[in-house]
Image (cartoon, rainbow, N blue to C red; front, side):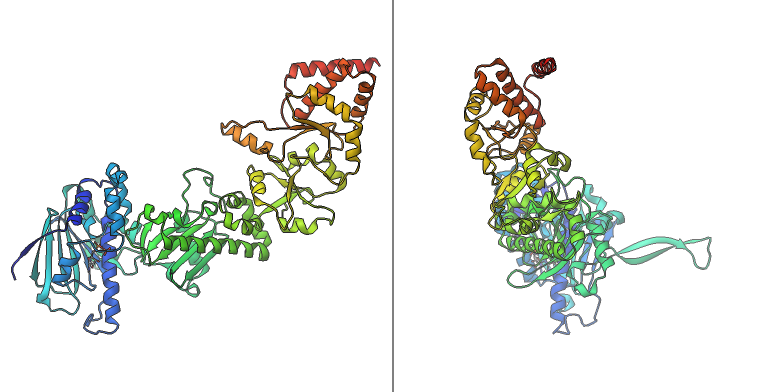
Length: 632
Ligand code: ADP
């Protein structure tokens, strides 16, 4: 038969043009693509061979072979799969007809890729990626079951056309022969091929083999070296996530965890399951024991490694895992996604969303189960990752109830280091307690010694110690828990059922009004406190104001935070207030009274961990009053 010359379809030229002229990085992915095609071709042949003895009459082992030829400057990727007829070759290797093409072409047209062509490297770029490294590609293929003389040779230099002819080929399957460009000759080197296979195709089910020549001591003469050439398998072929759970030992699970996480501590939990139904996938996920040092960094990589039909597509598929579960490591394999899938496409893909939902639920369910059945292990896990997990209350509205059940806190009644859940707290609430109380602070000791907790201590009311920087934000977004509202110990008016509060408010009404007038620049109200026992005064933020702890965090991040409307609360049981009432009764305009009010306000600032407005004036005023007291 004669050689026939044919033109490529327009979109093929478009893709080839990009491959050749714009893609500079990650050229090595051509090998991933060709090995993946070979593996698909074997899949098909293997399937046919189940019912047709003509497909693999010799019962050969299915395999993919890499044949580097230094002299010819060619790298051949050979498979013994299904092969192509002449018509199939013309059809498959001259057009683009696979799923994802439309998105791919759209992306090619986009500004983003035009400015930044490397972006398409993230795509599986299929057979045509061969032209990234080769200036000529020859495909010689023989369809399974076809006679030797009905094989096909396809040849192109990516110049807008290809030639196709009938030839004779000995075995079944396809040879893709790459005439490597001068600058990509490294793909003839054993170590380079080894590395690329290891990196991208390690878990391909079929052996990827290559002839390797080594010098070994001659068995007949120890002094002499002889060269031996053997076929060596380059990939480990262990797709452990596709195996049945019962076939995998604990050790194998851990080995694989090490491989993907580079964490040498055994994981806290392994989650391995297959989802069946409209979307099918396998997931092998791990909950680590130890927090990686960079988990709070912006560039921390989120998401499992994504495999499509045993080909690694990307090592972190962030579209598959919400960031608050970013501690989860693992692999997800789906046969429903196209190989040439990009991050952009994944962001809004139905299948990906189904998988994300499923693994999110699975992880949260596993944590709930762990909390119930292995509380100690859970507390340990929570110590490492609780701060990350609770971000979910803010980011995952749908699941905030489920996450709320996973939260743990120390309280004023737990031993340091021991934590209880919100459910435990509510179960311990006495009948007359209406709200869930919490106190924020940078650490337990600071939170606990705060004057804001005085009355809680006196009345024996348990208060949650919320010591993570984001706790106030999280708690205010939780909404009521088991129909109980959360009440901050340092915000809003507090009423622990003190009947005297109102009476006192009346009794000191005029004095409080005078103080309010004097401090009107600083506070929006001066009132009798429901929270103080030993201290004379404290400052209280409004119910809806930012918690001081949060405000501090934002300020540290360089953001401006308005002070909000604060109130000064006065302890009616404190002797100082009684003394001021006396002064007020004797002379409402007394200078000393004025000075007391200023000092009290500065004291309240001190109690908050802040500085007095004018430390020098404060110290002077205090010394003066002390001296006067001694005189008396
Ligand atoms: P995809 O593999 O995503 O369909 P490619 O551009 O990589 O896209 O390949 C196009 C087509 O060429 C494949 O669908 C297949 O029919 C055929 N093909 C490629 N490589 C082989 C091979 N090694 N053996 C048999 N057919 C192949």
